[in-house]
Length: 145
Image (cartoon, rainbow, N blue to C red; front, side, top):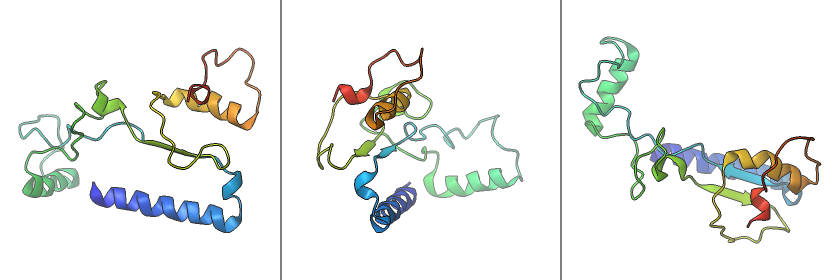
């Protein structure tokens, strides 16, 4: 997990550096959003009948995982309950960052819940593009924060 986060951080930095290099950073809305909570259920059941067959590459990979992690899940969402695939906070509460130069001040925080279905109508609104007729009857997230 730590190496994945390091890789995401480095890649995000390269992307933002490239926007600066191209001279378009001040005219770019950047949205970073995770898909859902961490994996808290894989590789945890030593008696699973649904796992990969003995002798296959996936089986060998899981055996290597168990050698080091035992039967602990790959991630821990503490203090949130559960994770990926669950409706509990650990499965639905994820990080999100938005950079909109000249509009959102650095360090600003918003506690308003956001759902990914809000993105399309909100981005249309942010860009001043009219919504297609007959769609998006709910208020956008940007109008609430």
